[in-house]
Image (cartoon, rainbow, N blue to C red; front, top):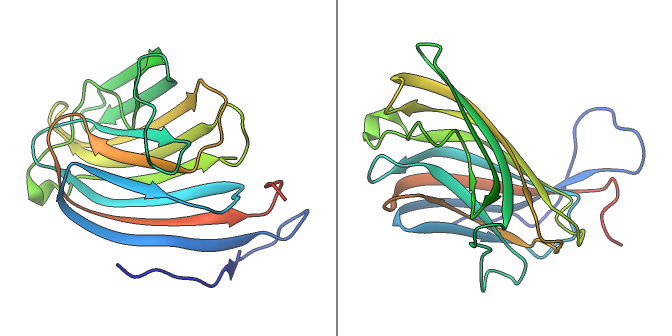
Length: 197
């Protein structure tokens, strides 16, 4: 699993304090129940690229947070507030809303990610906003996958919030049923724009 150590300057014009991208991890996994990512930096945001996260069985891609370095993950009903939507190839729209969830789904729960390897699973981008702040950490993501219901390709987006005020220093990605057959996760921390000193 290659890791980078040197921060890279963010390309493009910015206003305010300098902003830098610091690579965290580049991991390829297969046959695992969860993918756990923990970081130690005081980042303004953490961004995760999810590439072809394929389930062993048709399932829903989900995420949870930790505030103790991965020792435990918030997994109780009432820990999260979630909104998610999916638009399938036949223009079917699906929505999920839960103000008292035990996790955050990366897409509307009625549409599962297809377990057929050739369907290439779920791919997308996830951003954890201001994880250093002992507040109600927000997470936003968008992506696409080949759905079981729909059927066909689907695009999706979600936004959620941890309902307990706590500093977040890691996340867990997994499927609601069964293992992750295969996936690649690339993550980086954004330094600047108000992170803790």
